[in-house]
Image 1 (cartoon, protein in one colour):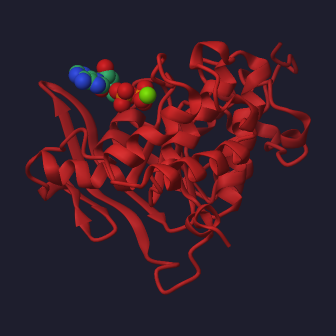
Image 2 (cartoon, protein in one colour; image 1 turned 180 degrees about the horizontal axis):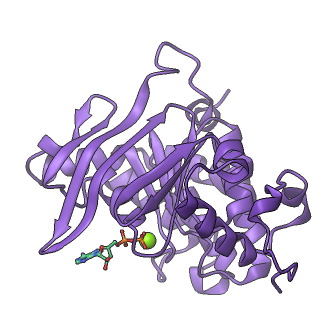
Image 3 (cartoon, protein in one colour; image 1 turned 180 degrees about the vertical axis):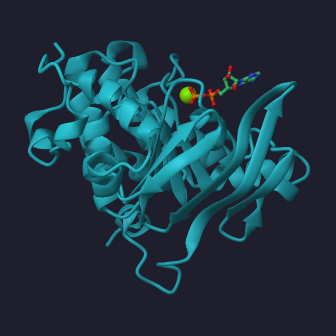
Length: 290
Ligand SMILES: Nc1ncnc2c1ncn2[C@@H]1O[C@H](COP(=O)(O)OP(=O)(O)O)[C@@H](O)[C@H]1O
Ligand SMILES: [Mg+2]
């Protein structure tokens, strides 16, 4: 097993069932705008947890709290043994961000650097990896996201889906303990969405701890251990996909899913078979989305 495989492997040791991420009663306001109103989330090692909910309900804010990019006014956030809400000083936040990968809708690759250089930069500059080791690791990660042949290409020469796969490889190059994905397929052409979802699904299968925000409901249903539904800065309900998609407890969850499932028609066939929504969630008028 090489280093890439070892850090991607599901942790079967003593930490296997302890929560890696824990949010308790997290409250956050921007001025008078109360954005998070008491958020509780648990993410165990090796789990994929997906946050779904309407736009503006606080999903991205939750992810930014986990990396310490935003500090809540109230509540506790643990990442492993780190109490994120008590971190002080830039050095402590940088130390946390080395452990938590973050992939955004906008890939933000360095346009003047090749794909390989984009992957080598942070490991050599930030965590002091030897150049040769970082390059070997980068090549292995490019193979993993099926972009070996693009190592010397520039980001501008790649499709959106390819750039997003490079961004995922770049996050993995820092050997994070977990990765946060914030709507990483939302800006992509429909035909490249599937290749990015495939890469994420493989990471999940390999035991990478992942927290995702996505509108790809069928994908979320297929890969997630837990689904959290947020609305207006609260967790309305959470549970395994079979519960949230099959037997949602709250009318607000049902209303959201009816809209969302009607609007998400474009998954590769391999995902379709894995997901059968409850009949009550399908559009009542029998009109399927385009
Ligand atoms: N930096 C910010 N300053 C002020 N308001 C913000 C900021 N970031 C987010 N908000 C507000 O917080 C709310 C939740 O935003 P966000 O977490 O991005 O929602 P979601 O990701 O669910 O769409 C929105 O009303 C948004 O306008
Ligand atoms: Mg968001």
